[in-house]
Image (cartoon, rainbow, N blue to C red):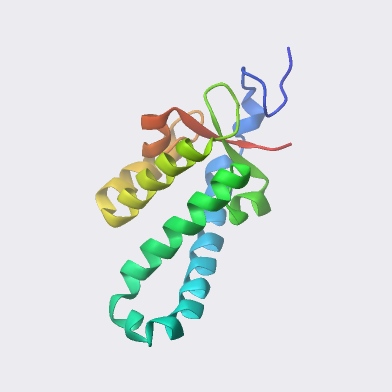
Length: 143
């Protein structure tokens, strides 16, 4: 049986430590998004300070969608050696990356959904969050 990250059958080692790695990747991605927002502020004549949380959502949405669509992982995920894939082990298409990013953004905007997502990542065998369960996606170790 082939247990490569792209195989249609997943091996348990592909999920080992994934929730922890996703957490660290998330911290990196949030910090990077904040830095990107700080770089964008002058282009808003610094009015972006007054709607900084919204700016974080918008910039974060664009960052996540483009990085996930371009390689099935954000830069934080790549640093941690994980990537998102569909139930068949295939990388996320641009459309599925958009849907995943939309689901993530809704969860971040509504803290109870984010809490449910984190709990699901911690208690499910594949470490899947709420959006992953809805879309049939999962994060796996690359090696």
